[in-house]
Length: 258
Image (cartoon, rainbow, N blue to C red; front, side, top):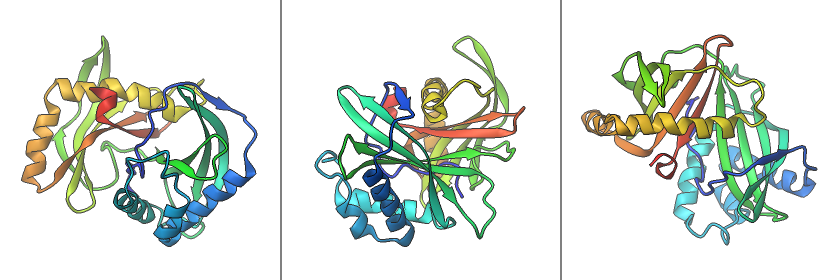
């Protein structure tokens, strides 16, 4: 299971506060569960019918199918999905209901915690966005458990006046012909954060910018050509807390770090 699961739809930049403890909308939960089962069973056409196409005009059916197919592969080891959290996100005046589902496997031993956020625009019965995420539990000096090509080994970097132990900068291999530039950093996890995904998404920006400003993107492009890969525009940041033995990975869009 790749530690960097590619987002099915990179549609929304939700930067405002996430509110926990909101009452769940039973109908939306049922639709979200149905969609996950469609993905699990490879029923793309049925998934397309309950996707919010009107509010996502930039997502063509072809893009949807590509993301759906990738997510189907990523979820192939799981048997069911359990709702673990619900809340509300705001993007300007738009309100999105978010439901977090934990992926469960009863037949295979999955080391990492894998969950998926599914969002709906207010009271809509159509899915607005899907965001998989992984909490890594094993100790690793690499940025993922998949195949990687190393760019630089461990070193100390000073970023925004703070020293960080960088344990590796790599190209993570996606599919047969894609690669993701990713950096892993030793990092003490916060104990008072309710939304770890949002926290690390914001914190990852400075590490992605470090890669850009220090020429690692250009180095990665050259290395990707050598290994016959197309370098993705996104950058991955892998945080690892040695004390608790856990990690958290995020993937950032160009608009977030440039």
